[in-house]
Amino acid sequence: MYRMKKRSSTSHRARLPETTSVPLVLTLMLTVVLAALGSAMVMGTATEMLIAGAHRDGMALFYAADAAAEFAVEELARSDWEHVLDTGARSTFVDGTAADSGSLAGAPGYEVYAYGRFSDLLGRAPTAADPYVVVWIADVTASWGEGESGGRVTDVRATALGPRGIRRTLTLTARLMSTDEEISVERISWTQEP
Image (tube, rainbow, N blue to C red; front, side, top):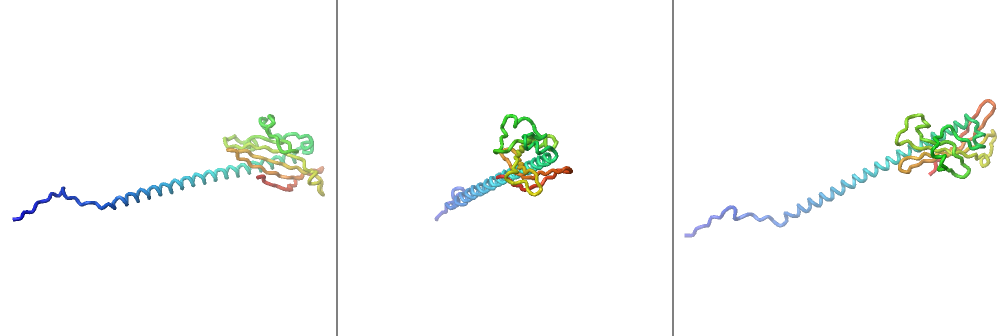
């Protein structure tokens, strides 16, 4: 009689097909692609944050320069501005550190008028992010003419210097006129420098 041999269950295992390594490779490739996409998104977000910060700092400097120019025009209107334009006298807003060293030379024909930390101009406590503002003035009456109502024309150039080398400069051109009763200021032009 023919006897059948009993097979043990451990001796016969089902063989896995060779294709089972393909899903593993595809899973690893998908993981690498998703990691690359995730890191690209993080880099893009970080770059956007830097751009937004630079824009915010630039706008703060722009407003600081604008305020410094307006301060200078109003101070000129309240003072003996003809004496200031003729002699190069300085503003009451000076901190005595930078201009004394000659480091604030302006464009030809411009004289340093006011300079200091913006917080000092505002009369508040200084912060680490305070810009440094510098105002130059120049008598440009010859190029504009005295006009119908007379008066001297003054360029007021204000620059605000901020962190990471950011700066904003603008030029305000104003006609300063005085009569026996009052002093008036006519703003002729306003430009932001690149």
